Image (cartoon, rainbow, N blue to C red; front, side, top):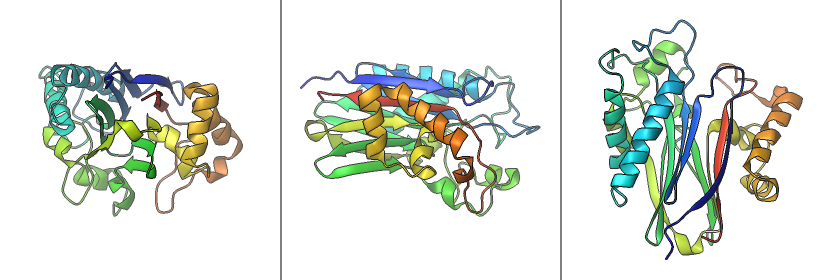
Length: 258
């Protein structure tokens, strides 16, 4: 059984701000991270921002995955968060509930299995003989409110939601699983800048796979931008604050044979 995974990927910022998404691919794994955009004037206790965090965390995850190819993905993520804490070099208040944070999506080949992990609202989507499966952590969908006080109070707390930041314990709350490699037909990882195609713009994941397979992953981002420009009226969530007109968008698509 081959251990190599062949990924094609694309990433693009949603504005002239630095891209707060990050993607890492290797022969055995792919990582997609989405730094959580900070609200204006929010005291984070940190001299760094989300773009810095996702790059540090991506490096730490890559080292942990390379060093422990059979270690559980939860432990891999916990190890990476702990290592990323050290990258702050004592300059930041790591107890601040608004410290820079990131969603996480990982897939990894392990023998005849492909393991996956999702933390917060990035996604892993795959198709096999059982049909299409969307792996998503939806706990941010059911918070009682979305103001900065409520989000800070419920971040990385039971009954709230979990995200990669400064607490390695968040890794144990990730959504994880494995799928047999032999029956795998399609697989992708993406940030919510891509999944808005299905959340807001009424495409199915089969449509998203089709665009990527016909024209490559960059074409999926182009499709997002067209919908954002032509149908901004669809960018709305009931009971939530305004949705960004354009968001950072990243996906990695596994190319067969698997």
